[in-house]
Image (cartoon, rainbow, N blue to C red; front, top):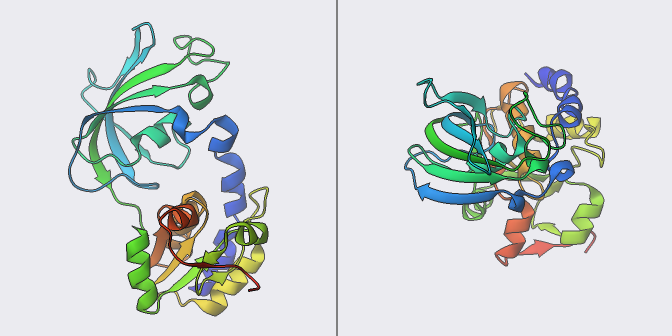
Length: 253
């Protein structure tokens, strides 16, 4: 199974280049989110398959599209670049039965070009969304407290960030440091070599990055293409770990 990893993971660089970058469009905080109804059950996380009912309108009230009248929810994989960035941001964290109103600026919607002759250039969009169903991703996302428990039981933690990131923030104590992607999003072959030497295909292990976005993509491919079935993604990354005041160590100290 290990032999499959080298072949499949080399394609990850193509995914990172072709998928929309939130950094190039705008900040996640630019999406206005109004909670209408809190759902129950499984939380929608990156690489979950979700079914969503929606009605989209322009700021002045004109409805340009709706799944409600068609009677069939829209299905997509959250965080995989299949929808406008504002949807990937705004639907994350919802649970089945939950309803939100999303206000999405042009940079996280259709930008200066507009779309389909019905969405004008530079339009801010309003979506009423209802999460109908969630299918979890093929890997587990864990919180900081869950990570502590896993580390205490001997689970390996791999920090996939770049050396300058390790120096800037420090790393979780005991982390294995191995860069997975360079500054341009190109996949590092050295990561594959490290993984093959360090982790068995059926072994449980965790990966961490800055906010959990890079590791979500990596975890999805490890689980679906690489043959690793027990991947744990640290959901909110080192940023959340530090914000909670948890212990870190500086590389080289």
